[in-house]
Image: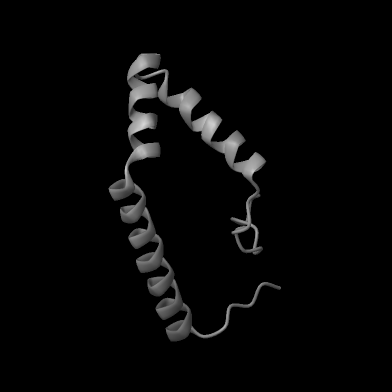
Length: 80
């Protein structure tokens, strides 16, 4: 696109299959920078770490609040 990004908003309703594909792509990139066992250990830590997931939930909450404030201050966005 020569005029920038599409005016359509980013999706927020990804399916489990879509997320699996995205995470697989991310892990495929990361494995180029480390060995498979290290990557596996880190993914396992994330999967089993309540603290890591709680941190992500806080980041999501803060991001949503910030976006809402920005949208309120700037008025409605014209996606035409």
